[in-house]
Image 1 (spheres, helix red, strand yellow):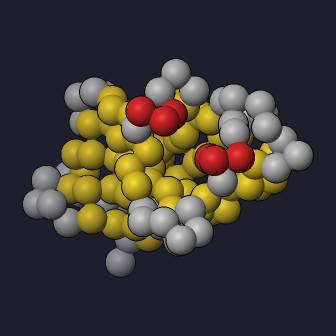
Image 2: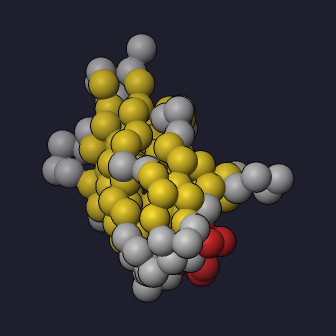
Length: 116
């Protein structure tokens, strides 16, 4: 059973940057969409950014111009570069792989806290 493992979260001051990484352990064949979601306390999980097999990207309005999603050529890693972080970006961040049959894989999440 393939698993996704996130890393790179932590505590950062407002205006700072973090780079999240997500690695697939085990094969996840035919992945077509890689994404990052986040869930803040008391809120629903929301899509932050996604990148397709064609490298088309989409971002939540709240992170446009600040966050950037990328993936490696093999499709086993996805990254989220987060700049100009604000307290409202505080959340648990989850990576998500979805394959051509619409099966989804989730990581366990990594905490991002933006606080002075």
